Structure formats: structure tokens, C-alpha cells
Image (cartoon, each protein chain N blue to C red):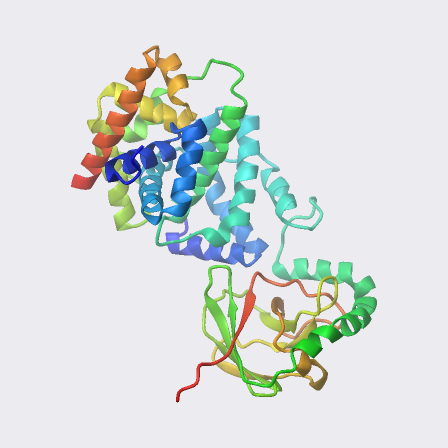
Length: 186
Length: 237
């Protein structure tokens, strides 16, 4: 895996219309991003469409990337996740949304799992997020993870976990407030 | 809602990034973020924090053919043609543009005439050639008659072996730009502007990647995403 600086350089070259740089970016990042998209949409055809739309958006918006604000993988992951959630929401004809599988939160729950080594600061951020998510109660962690990975709204969360809407809103908000307080301490 | 309350704004930003802020509340918050830098800062904070969750996903090989479909959407090349190099892509454009080249050249001279009339004010300029991240890759100083361009490399632009950047003067849409010369890969070089083009400056400059030996005559260059900004130098008293 190239360093964040190398990926940032490839993005800068994409902004200059360099298709070769775009191909290299795809070669380096597509497996990680496809894994993320599959985790969210859990459907190969949908994931393929999202991956394509996401990479086209990365190409179109490469000039907007600011390395001082986010790592290249975080930035590209954010684009893929947003696209995946857009697609999920449009296609949510079925009320049945697959529950989070145990392996999906394995990364959060296994303290021996090493974060991706992007930079010292970002490794620290990943560890901090993991520690702080583990510190939430199970309901809070579940609704935050479902909202993040499944793109669920408050109402969908309430239906999914079978709790009143107000209770679910409270879990989300308190969970986020607790997360912020914890992150600020670490 | 009191959008001056930092705790409320922070919570809204977190829910916005998480995705649980929806409907009209989401639209209102987007408008708020577009007009208040402090709100945008909070969105960026949560964007960085929560999107660390994505880093835990296990990599999975994308399906075969995905790249070809992506490439077909961002490239004007035929979808079945795999990407090889900048050089091959440029060659495609040259072939595509060749048939209209001569007609375009004649039209360019005719149609650019009014532009020339508007740009006959004498004076020196500084021109910044910026990439899309607003970095000045080259800085150009002109003399009073725009006869000579002193071009200095002032930023980084990775370049494949055997390739170089060339400077062109835009002659308008669908017309072949006029080649001015090769841009320095480092340091400073001078480019002499042909006599007939001097009245057309200041004008929009383009940069393309070509073989070091130079672009073939008559072929249409494929400009990089670099903009030219003409400025009057500031004089001391």
C-alpha cells in the first residue's frame, strides 16, 4: 500500500487529468474501498455500481481533496460510503435490512487488531475511536454502527431494533455526545 | 433552534455525518454549513472521526471488468481500450483532431481577431499557471511587448519519463491552440512569442503533456487542468 503522501500525489495528478495516475489509484485502493462498499450494501451488483460511481466521483472531485483535512483513504472512503448509503436509501423497498454481523464490528472489538498505518496521528485517531466506541453501551454502539454502515434513519433504527423512536434518538445523541467527550480526552 | 449554541451545532454535525439527520433538518443544516465556517469545521471534525470506522473493512477484490467500466466513464477513449499511458491517450486525441485541424487553424486566426484588438495595451505581466489545487506550477514574467516569456518552474508536477509540458495559447473553442514552447521541468527558460501572437496576449494559456521531442504539427493538444491567471506586477514607488 502506498503512503498517504503517495496517494495524495496520485489524487493531485488525477486533478490534472492524468488517467495513468487514476489507474494506479484504482489498483492501490479499489480492494479496500470495495470491501467497505460490500460491507454497507451487502450485494455484489449494488457494490459494483457504487464502486463505479464512487471512483468516477473521486476522479471528478480529486481537485477538492485537502491532505491537511483528511487522509486520502478516509476521503475516498467517505465518498464511497455516502454513495453506498444514497443507493441503499433509494432501494430500500424491502423493510428487511440485514443486521450487523459479528465480524463487521470485529475491528472495533478486538484490541489486537492493528489499525492501518497511515500516519502516527491517524493511527492514534483510529485507536481512540475504537476505545471510545467500546466505552459506549451496547444500544448506543449498535445504533451508531447501524446508522454508519446501513445508512439508517432514526425511524428505520427504531423499527429495526424494536424500540420507541424517542429512545433510539436518545441512544444516538447520547452515544455521540459520549463519543465526543471520550475523543476529546484521548 | 439556536444555531449559535456550539454544543447543539456539534451534535447536529455529528448526526449529519452519521446520516441520522434527514429530510428538511438535513437541508437546513447543509445551508447553515455552507454559510458558517465554524459549522463546517465541526462537520469536518466528525467526518474525520466517524469515517475511521470505514478503515476496519476487510479488503475484497473488485469484480472483473469494473475498472474498464469506470475508465470508460472518465475517459473519452473507447471503453474497450485499456489505459496505457498519457502518450497513447494523447496520440488518440491527435488522430481524432487531425481531420479538422487545418480548418480550425484558419478559423482560429479569423475569429481571434477581435480578441487581439482588445489586448493591445502595452505593459508587463506576471502569469501564474495554477493546478486545480491552486498551486502555481509555473510563474511567467512578460516584457512590455509580450515578446519574451520568462518561465520559471515554481511547483511540483510529476512527469512520466520522456514526457514534457508544453505551453499553448488558447484560440477559442474547437480551434487548435497555438504552440508557444516547452515549459521548463526545473529552473527558468525563455520562450519567444511569435510576432503575430503578441497582440493576443494576455490570453488564456494551456498546458499539455507531450513527448519531450515536441508535439507533432497540426495535432490537437489535450490540455491538463491548469489555469492561467494574468496579473499586473506591483511596482514600488
